[in-house]
Length: 127
Image (cartoon, rainbow, N blue to C red):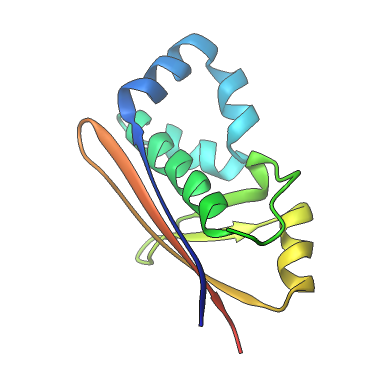
């Protein structure tokens, strides 16, 4: 049973500006170490940071009425393994909250072009 769905779009230009202005400080505030390593390996990292930012926002929206106060950016992590679809891993308070309320399955779809990055997240009750 689907218990939440969220979608978000992000301007790649806006993320590029944040990266130029705040650099490492911005990255370390929003993204996990593995997300930073993944994005920084790309020739143009901005679209990859933007799609991860959109995924975190989409996840937050998908939570709906579930406990979502106090969530930190780094507690929502986009994991990308070669040959596999991207997925969301959760940590900290959010992980404890979702486990407490029963196991959940999280589905993620991300995309980007030259201007916009987008992500959709579906949270399903795992019974």
